Image 1 (cartoon, rainbow, N blue to C red):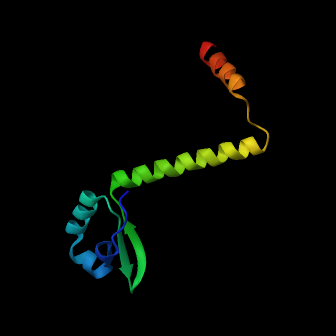
Image 2 (cartoon, rainbow, N blue to C red):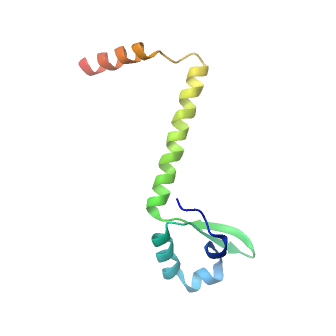
Length: 93
């Protein structure tokens, strides 16, 4: 995901409402998020769908890594040879 450009990517709700199509097109083209403000405070973020999906994928991967680390800390990990043996047994039936 591209980084936000503060001077271009933070807009008030009233401006967004008046120019919805052009703002959505810009988000799709630039791949940068758009922050919408309401009464001077951030209220929402508009993201390109592919950028959103990539972000969710990264979060899921990080959650899997954290879960794996927690399992290792709890003594539930196995060494490489044991993992290989279990995988081969499940594949070969």
